[in-house]
Each structure stands twice: as C-alpha cells, then as structure tokens.
Image (cartoon, rainbow, N blue to C red; front, side, top):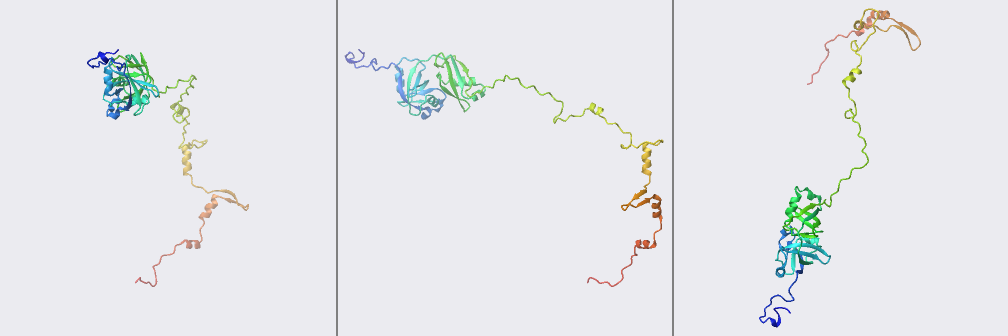
Length: 323
C-alpha cells in the first residue's frame, strides 16, 4: 500500500511516496563540448553542464555536497568522474570539457551515462607529465596546485589538461590514495611527480677502465720545440776573430791577417804567365815581360790614321725650301 493514492487519498494529493520515487540519479544524455554553448573557459577544469530536470531529480535524493558524478561510456566501458557547474543545458543533453571527451573516447552527440556518487577525500596523488617541457616551468608544483583548484575529483588512468602561459600541458594520473577515484575539494593532499613519459635517463658509466691520459708535453702547438737560453749557450758556434769571417794563413813573419789582407788589396793585377798548350799541340811561353814589350811597341802610322776621326765640314751644295 502506498500513501497518497487510491481511496485512502480523498483529497487527490500526491505526496511523492509512490513507486516512481527515484532511489538514485542514473541518466543518459547526449554529450557535446562546452565550446558549443559559448563556455570555452570551462576547459580549465572538470565541471559539466546538466539540464534543469537533473536538478529536480537530485533535489529529491539525499545526496552529499558537493555533487560528484560518475561518467561512463558504456560502448567501450570507460569510466571517469567529474563535478557539475550549472543546470542550464538543454533537456536530453549535457556539455563536457573536450579533454574529458577525449579521455572517454566520446564524440559530439555520443550517449553517455551519468550517475551521482560519493567519493572519499584524496590524501595522495602521483602525476606524470607527458612531456618534459612541463619541468621547464620555474615552479611546476605551484602551477599544478593552482590549476587543481578548478577540479573536483581525480581518477586513476585519466589524462588531465592544464593551461599555463597559453600552452596546454597533459598530465597522467598514475596513483591516488585511498581509492582509485577521490575528491580533491577542501582536502590536504600530497602531490608527487613521476618522471616525464619522454624522459630518457642518462647512460650509466661503463665498467671498463678509462684509457690513461696522454702525458703532458712541453712542446708548443705544432710540435716544434723552442730554443731555450741554456740550449743556445750549449750549441753556441765559435766566434771568429778575423774580418768578416775571412781567415788567412799566418806566415812565419810577423804579419797578421789584417796586414795580409791589406797587401792583397794593394797588389796590382798581373796577367797570366807560364807555358800554354794549344789544340794543335804546339807550346808557347807567355811571360809578363813579353806582354809588356808588346804593349809598349810603337804602332804603325796607318793604324793611327784609321783611328783618327774625320774632321767635320760645313754643308756645301744646293738647298731647297719646303715652299
């Protein structure tokens, strides 16, 4: 028997205690990105928009606040969790951040199942950046804590998207305590980082001993040694005492090298004197005396006249002008 129905309700009032009273929120909606309703700023977070009828159903249930929901793609059995921002979506549809749709393998107009749940508060979260570029941020922990304030809950296996300095950073949720899904609203949660997915650890040092270092050389660049002061003194050449390096053999007398050189410079030129042999085999004796006698002998008059230059005479004869 149900109160408020049949003959026991003479006034025809419906108190809501009938068999149609919902025991839990479990609905199916067509999902669309939040950009379809001109609310692209909701991409920074995990809040969704539900229709007004969902608020009426939730108001009849004894649920805990803040409202948290389980989102399930029944086609691929993919599950995640989120919160709600408004109940302003058209009936039969809901709006969701696009990065959540990617995690759930949903497309525009796909059917999604939404149920209300109660999640414990998280005490520990481990996150792995998909790119090591996230570590280039001056203070990544502070950036992460500021961005997680826009989230309601987290689920192991999700890939959340953080926007910082006009750039999107993808972070994988690797571990959550005390459960695989937990609320992060008004809770003291410890956050730990795992090495980025594209991080390559440095190669370990090899066990083979390193080759001995080459001995240091005192030679300059090029391998040509320089002469030192001591080497110059050791290899010094003997200093000559002559004039300009010319050394003349000393005789038995008292003449020195300088006197012999001076005498050689003052000595007059002498022609060759001695015995010569011609190509025919005849020999001749050439002495300086015969040379001097031949040079001093008088020359004939004919030769002297030939060598005399003719006297210059003025021009004699007829001349013509140019005109």
